[in-house]
Amino acid sequence: MLDRYAQWLFFSGVMLIAGDASAQWQFIGTGGATYSVEVHNGALFAGVQGGNIMRSTDHGDTWTDVNTGITVPSNWWLSSTGGALYCGTQLGSAFRTVNDGATWEDIGLSAARGFTMHNDTLYACQWYGTTGVDWSSDGGDSWNATQTITGFSGLWPLLSVEGDLLVGGQSGGIARITHSPDAWTVSNTGLVSTEVYSFTRIGDVLFAGTGTGFGSGGGVYRSDDLGQTWTASGMDGYTIYALHTMDSLLFAGTSANGVFLSTDTGATWTAFNDGLSSQQVNRLTSDEEYVYVGTMGALFRYDDLGSAVKELSSSAVRLSAWPVPCADAFTLSMDLDGASSVVAQLFDVSGAVVATRTMGRVAPGVRNLPWDVSDLAPGLYTCLVVADGQRQAVRVVKE
Image (cartoon, rainbow, N blue to C red):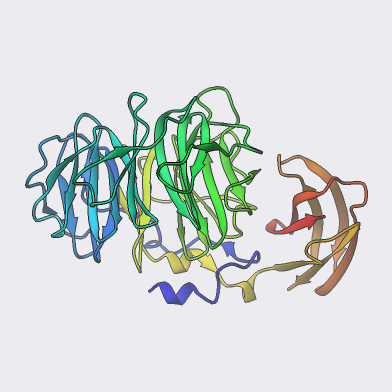
């Protein structure tokens, strides 16, 4: 169950280990391009591009077709919001069910994605044309257009965060509004890639997944000010079609390289593909027990996630850094289980190494290392420590 992870999560010391034979992605019976997967009212829904929408009440072990009323078999987005489940299709109208998929009704709005409730209003964005983002005060019975977002096209994800609504586009980057009549404001400060495919959040920390299709760097970006500014957070060179959080585990789904997992809010990433036979990822989601990934080949479930995560107390090295933020120096504290050869590196937000400390063989126990950063610009940094091959990271903020 999910609560068994609570004591492990949100610590930079959590490491990945190889699990047993059952701890891997398992195919769960929806062959074909699974463009959409969503948990709604305790059940799992999946949509195959060009096929049916299916429902499972046993975490994907068995499935029932729930397609009554769907007249366009090109579903590519499922969203559970406001008590209803919405299905956007690539080649026609969107659909809504309020009875757990028993029946669906046409609600218009072609090529719709990203259905999200914001300030008690339903919003959805559209992929084709310049229609942009629409809103509905009656759950989708009628739609109204927001103002045009100049320079944006191919709108994908929406995220309601505090008072604002964010939208990402395949071109244009990220824009935001507070209320439906407002003019959109571009929020691209810090982004290298303005090709945005996914959003998620851990508390007040936001993450955006970007692409490389227009020659930009791609990867994951992080915002600590609710989307006003962004900093690179790893996965450079990858197109990130999907982002998802399960408590404080952060998952990224790529266009061709499967799933990656970060246990330290994006400071470091590890490939998480054992058993995943199709590595072009469309969507990620989770329920109270499992993580699910929809790929261009099938739908998969990760069995026994707990055995793939090692407790903080059994890690070879545990880190902390203080003060946060710091001025001209910080102290890096390392707690080593055994004697280890240690190298520490400091990275800026672009991923460039700005300082390296080679410490040689270090005795077990706690070692405090003062680190002078007076010559560095203010900003966010990542301190990575490698101790006999095991990697841990901690964030450092300089004022």
